[in-house]
Each structure stands twice: as structure tokens, then as C-alpha cells.
Length: 534
Figure 1 (tube, rainbow, N blue to C red):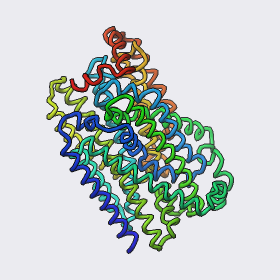
Figure 2: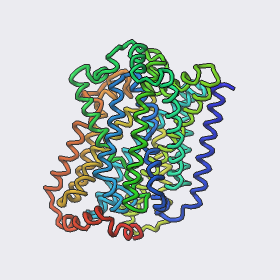
Figure 3: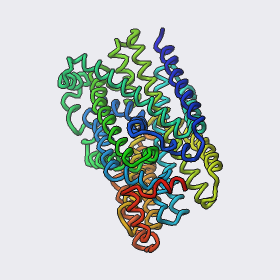
């Protein structure tokens, strides 16, 4: 059996299992709390698996190992950033957010502020971050399927993107948070199993000796020791060094502001479970990123990563699947075909799980924040709210499908870094200020969110990523004047500064008076359950 037909069978099996889970979950979804937060019925361990399933995206699995294969040490910095970021989420946000006890990020902000402006701003930011992140996953799906099913041409890639888009809309519309969470749990187990297997097979080729593996990678790529030292990608000039600091800031601070991660803290019954789930998530994610080091350098040691190779042509996105084929016995062998098909199916499950989580987050925010609280001023019935969430899922999925078709040339890890930059610039300043600063108010929140969001997206638009370079989105045009690919070093401070200025120029005694109650609730969880039922 050819690897293409084997891959097709495994792909269809993954899709069939996830569709089955979704139908099962749809029977369990009765209330808005079921749809948005899975009825808060998941244990800490289950939620930890689901968080890691949500977080270890196609960007992690395909993008990071590819970045390490091509850039060595500098590629590994993505792994470090993504992992260290969890400490910020754990120490500053996870438990406090769970105790504030609602469905979306905006609930926590709107608790002591004027509902309409704050919810509108938070929902806008949620949708923008989610769409950037969705783009990354769907670009990955296009690259993957063309490799695995042996289909060529633009139309094949576009058809793949449309199919993934329709599947993710189906998961969210039918399964809600329960279905999405179970899809993520299954995917986390598959991804960890696949990664452990490939890591063992790669290390076995080098007698389980890491230095032998690194030496072979340095030799095979022709880059020598430069591959193992800082500077191959980010050390060329002052601009690339600043770009690296900017990327690091976005990765480390972005996780604590990612809406699809934040709403996962609402799916557990108690704040203790929220802590447990983050501890499990850190353990699983830490192990995964350490293994991504072996996958990346394994690809550099065993595959051709030079110009014109499949790895280089895919911007590194195909390093993991091709490595699986190589350690399974090489191209043309049944072992290689089986492993390639298995890893591809795992990556496909990864993409489906993450896009479902992102679409659910955006749809929840549109329905709960914009429709129920801004348009209906809190008077919408639960049934109407869930119906609007389902309609919103169609709209957001459609936008993501159209944008993904145009973004095929961009590296996935880079697209995710962009989503992190927007989250760190727009969401994090308002969340941190709201939890820890009593004077923070409506104008501060609105200025911080819109200011960080517009600065971040604006700088990206005028950067070499969008125009003026060979790999740009519009490579034939040039309107770039901002030299950095990662805007975080400017846009994150702008978000914090605007939040401060907005707050100080329009004091709001009511918001300040409500701070002690929010502080007690966020630290103890007292009143959170009542708020949920309310």
C-alpha cells in the first residue's frame, strides 16, 4: 500500500473519530454553561491534557521543529519562549481568572466597568487574535495534505483549507466546549505518543547520545558550529537582534493573553483544579518542547535541509513528517510510509483540535459579549445566545478560510508569533491592570486594548512580512517602512502606557469602589459560582 493511500485512510479515521466525539458531546450540551465551559465538569488532569492539546498546535509540531532544522539554536528559542510563557500564565492569571468565574475574557474586565465599550473592545481583540492563530493552523493543513496525499497545485491546497474550515465549523456548531475539549484530549494523547516514538527512533540512530546527534546535524547541514550557536538567524545585524528580543517578549507575555487558553480555565469546577490543570499542562508541554529539540536537530542530521530541498521549500513546516518517514526506514519502505502517515494524521488531528478551540472562543465572545451584553444589554435568553454563537462560528470560519488561501507562503511558527504579539499588546495589559490596579477603569481598558491592537497590526502591515521582501504576503509590492518582523517590542509597551494614560485622564470612582470585591473574588473564588448561575 502506498504512503498516500495509507495517509488517506488514517486521515479519514481521525476525522471519523472526532466527528463521533462531537455527536456524542452534542447530546450532553443543554445550557449556555455546557456550550461555553463544558458544564465545568472536567477534572484538573483532563483539562491539563486539553490545554496542552490546545497549546501544542501545528505551529509547535511542524513550525518549531522546522525552525530548529533550518536555524539551529535560534529556532530552539521558539520552544523556550512558548514554555517559559506558561509561568506567566500560571503565576499571574490562571487561578485569578478562574475565580472571577465567567465565560469569556471580557466578563472579567466588565465586572467593574461600563459593559458596552469594554466588551466590544475585548471581543474585537479576541476575534483578531483568533483569526491570526487560525491562519497558522490552516496554512499548516494545506502544506501537510499536499505532501501526504501527493496532490499538487493551488486548487488542491485550497480544497484542503476549505475542508478543514468546514470541519472546524461543524465541531463548534454541534459539539460546543464539551466536544471541542474531548477532541483536544484525544489529540494531546496522539501527539505525545507520536512525538515520543519519533524521538526514541531518532536517538536510537545516534546511540542515544545527544552530542553525537548535534555533531551530525552541524556536519550534515554544512553550517558547522554556527548551527549550534546563537546568531544564525537573529545575529546578522542590529535589526535582527532587536527582532529577536521583540519575538521573545511576544512569546513570553502572549500566552497569558491568548483568549482560547484563557477560556480553558473556566471548564473546571474549582480554582484548585485550575492550578492542577496548569501543572499538568506545563509538564506535558515541557516534555514536548524538549522532544522538539530532538526532532529539529534530527531533521537537520538525517534530511537534506539545503536550498531547494522539501524542508527548505516548505519553510521548515514539513521537517517532522519527513523525519518520521526517514527513521521509519526511508522513502519507499513500508515502515517509512506507516510512520509518515501516522505523524501526518497526528498533525492533522492537532490542526483540527486547535482550530475548533479558536473558533469556539471567537464565537463565544461574539455571542456572549457583543450580542447578549452589548446589543441585548443582558436581556438575551440562553437559547438565543447559543444560537448566535453557532451563527458566529460560520462567519469566523468563512473569514479564516478566505484569508488562509492567500497566506500559503508564510511560516506557521511566525504566524503564531504574530497572534502572541497581538495577545500580549492588547489583552495582557488590560487583564494585569484590572486584576492588580484599583484605579484601572473603562477608558484605560478601551485605550489599552485598541491601542495595543492597532499598533501591533499596523506595524505588521508596514513590515517586511506583508510587502517588500521575497517571502512577503504581497511580494510584488513594497510599502514597508517598519524594519522588524515582530512588532512586540513597540506594541506591548504602547498597550501598557495607553492603559495608564487612559485611566489617569478619566477617573472612575465606581470602578475603583468595585475593586475590593473583585480582588476578594479573584483570590478566594467566593461568589464565583453564583455569578456563573446568574
